[in-house]
Length: 254
Image (cartoon, rainbow, N blue to C red; front, side):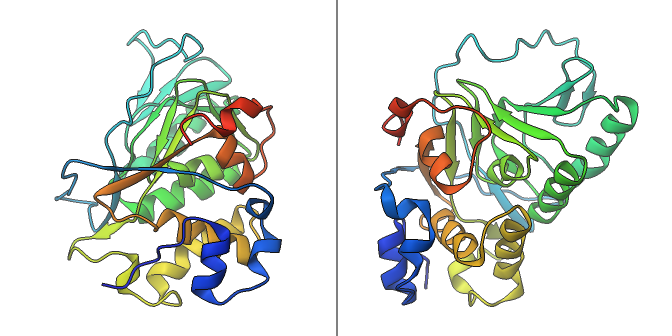
């Protein structure tokens, strides 16, 4: 099975033969370190599982800065309305998530921030990318508080924020998607539509062509049954943040 194995930009440049790539990304100035963990079987079945990215928690210690959920919040699928300006994402997205998100904004048009509290990924990658475009088109900011966990397909939603904020102590994790036939990104050419849709999405979210391909290769550097964990500091080297990230977090859970 062919796979994208580049976790660092210098390795990626060698793998893809793109000598200029290292100079095109902030990772060239900062060595990125990741932690790779094996996961339990997270294979999915049923509606919306044609291309899935979903993973269990990495065990982040919840911090008091996480939004306090009472269980009485108005729910729209995986979304919870916190107040007139904020909503929280607290579960995996699925095929109905774009419609649920749109309904929430229709009923609460003042929402401007999506708090990403517990985001294990998605059961439907195509719907997830549609949701990301909705987040961007509505000018919604994405914020991962300390103790918040954004994993797998949830990372695409974080990237969608018109403003991106992540506190020290936030965690991110990526891995490859898998389809209903058990195929993963490396089973297709990079130019295949199934791969290009992600690269195109990252470009729509503000990455350059080289940055988009590099980021996609990093997300696919581990198979679906594993995960690559890193903190807010490492994520800030891939995409610009609109909130301060503690320098110490560059080495925390990286």
